[in-house]
Image 1 (cartoon, rainbow, N blue to C red):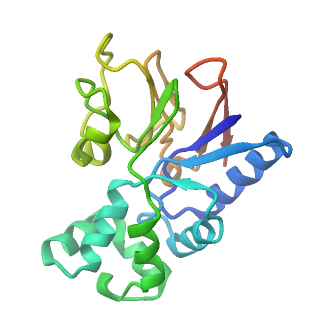
Image 2 (image 1 turned 30 degrees about the vertical axis):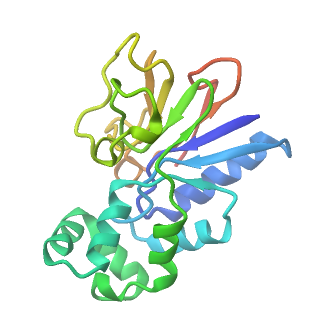
Length: 216
C-alpha cells in the first residue's frame, strides 16, 4: 500500500487541494494512506479552509506541528504565547477565521487540533514526523516533543543508532525542491513563498520516496 506524505501547508488551501487531487489520480482507487507532516496553520491566507478540509476528511492522518502547538497555546490566553503566535504568522490565521484574538478561535478548530493530531507515524522502514528525532532513542514513544516538533537542525546521518528512514518537513527549502538524502527526506518546499507544494510517495520496495508529486 502506498503512503503519500505531504509537507508543510501553512494555510495555503489551494496547494493542499491540488495535492489531494493528484494523489487521488495517482492512487487510482487502490488502497493508500495520506499523511500530512504538520504545520497547517499560520502564514498563508486560508487556514480556516485548510482546517475545514481536514475536519471533513478524517481518514487523512495529520501530524502535530510546531505551529499548531503555537496556536493552541495562544488560544489558552497566555500573553507570551500570543506574541509567539503573532510573530510566526498567526495574524493571517485570525483573519482567515474571522476573529481578532487567539482566545476567540472557534472550539471546532481548537478541539480538532487537540484531539486529532498525532506525534508520529511509523512503519517497518520509515518514521514520519514533523521536524526530527533523537537518533539515540530507538523507541518512538520515548521521543521528546521538543525534538519531534521544534528541532532547530535536521537529523544528521547516524549509522547504527536509528535504523529507519526519516520523513519530515519543518525546514523550508527556499529552492522549492525536496531534500532527499540516504537517511531522511525533507518535504517542506516553502510553498507559501515558492508556490511549490510537495508530496512524497512511499511503498514497500524501498525506504526513500519512489516518486515525488509537486503542484503550483
